[in-house]
Amino acid sequence: QVQLVESGGGLVQAGDSLKLSCAASGLPFTTISMGWFRQAPGKEREFVAAVTWSGDNAYYADSVKGRFTISRGNAKNTVDLQMNSLKPEDTALYYCAAPAPTGPALTNSNVGRLNLYDYWGQGTRVTVSS
Image 1: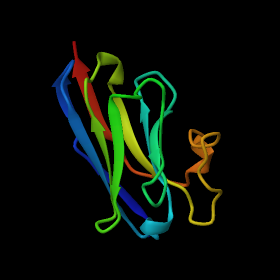
Image 2: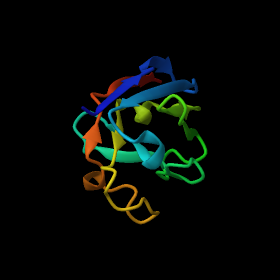
Image 3: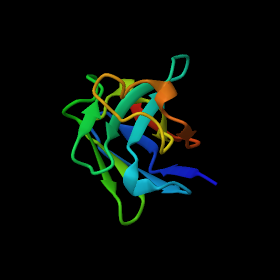
């Protein structure tokens, strides 16, 4: 059974930092890419960041580029999202996501597609006050 469990969300002020973590189980973690998405109230779920299985390549939404960093720890089956210089518009429910092991490879052109990801966590809430 696949499980993705996010943690680390909270209430912070604009300019603060926060680190989200996702613990994965039931997947061949070291062979698949991992992603982070977010959904703000009243908005559609959107891509935030993704990292390939080796950790060699990372992709970011333009809105977070230069502020967020995705990393993975293959020894512990975890993927983290370090978020710096947080803004009120970063307020959202943040989800960890994983594609099926047999799915297409992650590329710059498909990395943000929701239907590329088959497994989702329950989300962790991030609230940034101004």
